[in-house]
Amino acid sequence: MLFHPPKNPVELKVMHLNKTQQQRREDLMEATQGKAALKQLKKSMAKKAKQALKVKSKSKKKDKNKETSQQVFVLDFDGDIKASAVKHLREEISTLISTANKGDEVIIRLESGGGMVHSYGLAAAQLVRLKDAGLKLTVCVDKIAASGGYMMACVADKIIAAPFAVIGSIGVISQLPNFNKLLKKNDVDYEMFTAGDYKRTVTVFGENDDEDRAKYQQELEQTHDLFKHFVSTYRSELDLNKVANGEHWYGEDAVKLNLVDKLQTSDSYILQLMEDNEVYALHSRQKPTLAEKLGLSQAAEATITMAVDKLPDALARFDLNSRLNILK
Image (tube, rainbow, N blue to C red):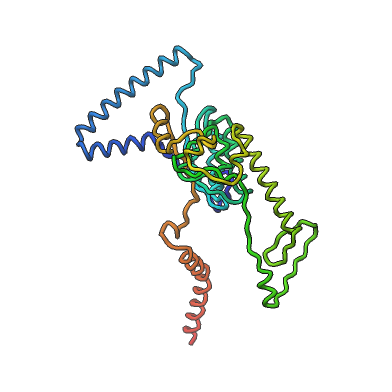
């Protein structure tokens, strides 16, 4: 893949959802109603396909400039605090940009409660690439898109959320313990050396003063302002005074506040598109190692690796001992 070294190859799997859904429908029909009913279903579907093809060809003749049915691509982003899934998301997006046609739609099934600012900033920037390439972007949220998750979602042309999905939390939080009193109690000195007044503001082990806390709070406010500016750039209809206070809302209230555009599950939306469009799901993953294929744990893999590394030395010692025994 594009951004991964050969030692860690990534494989991309593509699933044609129309065919998958049709196969499941046929399997269920055969199991519940028998082969005769399945045969009848296939005949009726073949007729419908022919009629649809005729209508499409006629419409092409009438209007040559009219666009044919678009392709739809489905990507998944399940975010953790470090937005680790962006490693694969960027690969999938790079592949799409180089192959999809302008006007095709990309659906991101997004689930994230947010995390590190720089990580989710990168994830949101990846979605901006799709729009810059002329692709339609829809974000579907079934459970949660809060904080950094909403930073990603707001880039979309359309945000669709389930009725009880958690949306919003446009704010910044930072918290850390301070062990300075504990260290003093145990007669442990802590020293820190910096060059630059603000190389370090608040610290975990040192003593924090009001100036340190004020500077740290200023940095949080600055980050919040950047967050609000980013959201307003892509969703200008939002009243930031109402929604950019760190609060979150469920789907129905989020629609009223213009945080999302529509209430619908991702499954329902994708099935709706499948009636007139070809829909493909893309999923990339790192190729599993031999140990992973065999179902071994990381510890077992490390043990095997160590054993393999030591094998030449063991064989050499065995050979030496054999020679010594012969000499005896």
